[in-house]
Length: 355
Image (tube, rainbow, N blue to C red; front, side, top):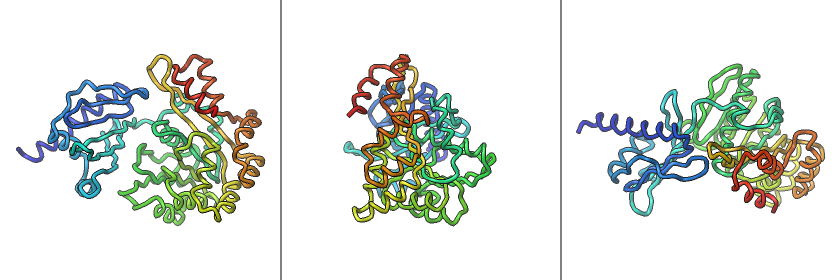
C-alpha cells in the first residue's frame, strides 16, 4: 500500500477520534491496542464508543503524529511527550509509551484553541491583581488535571491584551498558542526549541523579557532561576503540583540543601507576590467541573513568616487577609457546597484539606 495513503488514512482517523472525544467534552483520550478506547469526562474514566485496534493499527495510528526526530526518541526512550494540532479546532498534549504487554499506548490531553475567560473558568476578580503586577513571583498550584495551564493561559493572554510587554513562555509542551496583541508573546517548547527549562531560563535573561512563564518548576535549578529572575525585576509565573499555599512555600524551600535554605527563604519572602492553588470538582449536574481555589497574597506579615520559617502559620495569614481577597481551599469548597454546585465528591475534599 502507498505510504502517503497510509499516512493520510491514519492521520484522518486519529483526527476524527480526537474531535469526537472533544465534542463529547472529554479532557483526555486513551488509546490502547487490543482494548476499547477510553475518555476522561468531568473527572471520570469512561469507555469511548469507538472500536479498539490491533497492535499494528494502534502503532500506525499514534506514531504518525510524530516527526522523524520524535520517532527516533521514542525508539530510544520507549516513551515521549509531544504536542499535536488540528488547526483551528483543538490542540493536544500527547504521550506515547510502551507497556508490559509489549505494544504502544497513547494518552492525549484535549485543549481548545480558545482561551476561556474568567467567568467560564470560575476565577475570582482578585486574579486581576496578578495580571497588574510588574515584578515578583506568582505560583499556580494543584494536582494534575486541575486546570493550572488554562488559568495560566488566561492570565498571560490578559497581560497580552492590557500591557505592552515582552512575554516569554517556557513549556513542556506548549498547550495554548497565544497570538501577539499589545504584547510580544514568544513561546518555547522543551525538546523542540530548547533543551531544558534551566537552559531556556538562562537564555531568557538575555532576551529582554518583562514576563517569564515557566510551565513547571521541576527541580532545584529551575526554581533557583525562577527566583533569580523575580529578584532581578521580572514578573515570573510558575506551576507546582502542591495542594495549598503552605505546602507550596515548603516545597520551594525544601528543594535546596539545608545550608542554602535560609538565603532562599529571604529571597522568597521578598519576591513572592501570590499563590493560587486550585482543584476541579464535578458539578452536581455532572455536566462540567467547578473550580475551588485558595488564594494567598503578599503582605509584610507573610514575608516575615517565610523569612522566619513559620510557614505553618500561613492559613492564619489567609484568614486575616479575607478583606484583601484571600481565601482558603476549605472555604472555597464549602461555598460551592452551599450553592449546591458540586456533588458528594466535594465532601471528601473538605476532609482532605482540614487535615
